[in-house]
Amino acid sequence: MNVASFNSILVQKIINSYKKKLSEQYESNDFESKRNEHIQNMLSNFINEANSWDKDAPINMEYIFNKLINELEAASMETGDINIVFAYCYRFLLEYHINQPQQLAYPYSSIQSFVTHQLDAFDTPSKIQLEFAIRELPISILKKLVSGDDINNIKLLASTTIKAKEKIEAWDNELDKKEKKVNSLKIELDKHEDAYNFVGLYAGFAKLGRIKSKELYWSKAFMLALGVIIPLAIIIQAIVYA
Image 1 (cartoon, rainbow, N blue to C red):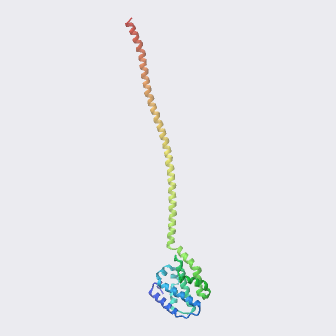
Image 2: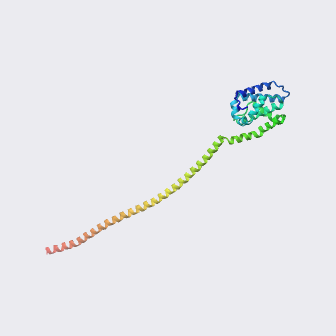
Image 3: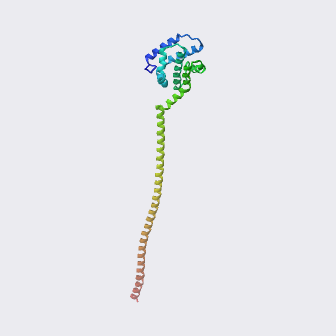
């Protein structure tokens, strides 16, 4: 069987043929009755929800799909062969259940209880398959999920986020350095401004001093001239009126 899909018309024909033959099989005890009922329910769902089974049971689609279809096509009604069909179907069911967010609804939820309580009633080959489904299959599913594209994208996003955070921290440190340098330059400029203002103030006082010195010079000259002119005027007046 090369067509790995429950959607295949040929596969569905094989499943329906097996279901019909199994329904005609004599059931000698309660174990066989429950086992066959669960097989019928699982096979029916493989047809009714074919797309979901193809998508949500990828590990078993890859490893035992052809084995299951070959068993169904052979349609042996020997106890061991029916048991192995049940085991293969249960592997699909368990993987499908793990990959679904919701709990399994009845009647599929009762299949888990049946396996738990009736595991020792199965023959060795089918029991090995059931024990693998219970103990090893969840680990295989987890490994596939961890190595899948979605997880890789999450890892890439986490790595990118860390790098972006490191880049932002580097920018913040650089900005802090530049801010400190700017503040240092501002302090230096303030000092130069104070010095410039002092020099300007000194120059102003010096200029004012020069102006006052000139005024004082001319004041002295004027007073000196008055000191000469006033006595001279008195002498002249005394000579004229003598």
